[in-house]
Amino acid sequence: MVQLLLNYELHRVLGLAIASTRHRIFISTADLKNVQLPMAARAARCRSLLSMLDDLAKRGVEVRVLHSGIPSGPFLQELKRCRADGVAIRRCPRVHAKAVIIDGRQMYIGSANLTGAGLGAKSPRRRNFESGILTEDLSLIDPMIEMLESVWDGTQCEQCGRKKFCPLPLEEPAHMRNVEFGMRN
Image (tube, rainbow, N blue to C red; front, top):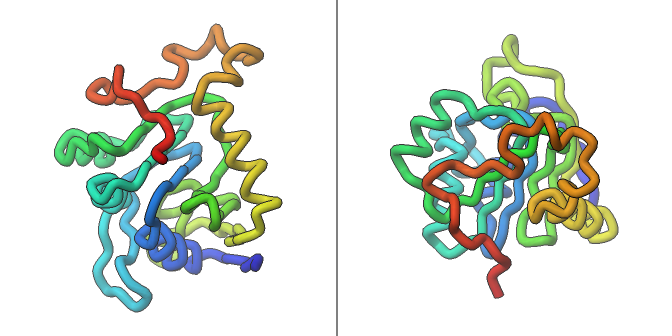
C-alpha cells in the first residue's frame, strides 16, 4: 500500500496513525513544535503531539523523536510540564528527514515538518503546501529505519564532516540524560 497525502490530509492521517501505535514509534523531523493533532477520524478536538507521545510511552510504547532544530517554546514548556519520561528525544543538527514510522510496519515520509503549517493544522490560508506518502511497504520502511537508527545510536557521528560544529551531539533534554533507550523486546 502506498497512499499519496497532500496538504490537510497529512494532519488527519498522521494524527490517527500516531494514536494507533502499539509498540514503537520513531519520528524524524527538522523542526519540532507542539502541533495539535486530531484524536479521531472526524474529531473536532485535537491534542498536542507531545501529550499523545507521552500517553503512548505510559502505555509501554517505545517513543523516539530525532530532530535538528531547537524545539519551539510551547513544546519545551509542555515537555517540562508533562515530563514525558518515556519519550526519548535526541537532536542532531544534520537531521532533515521527515518520517513517522509506526511499529516498523507503517511509515509516513514526505516534505512536512511536525509543525502546524507543515501538517496543514493551521487555516487553509496559513498552511504550507506539503506532500508525502503513507506506506506499508517494508522494502521502503526497513532502509529508513536503518538510516535513522544509525543517526540515533551515534554511528553516523564518526564520519560526520560537521561534528566540530555540533554543540552537543545527539543532544537529549537534561531530564532524559543517562537513561537507557534501547529496543524493547
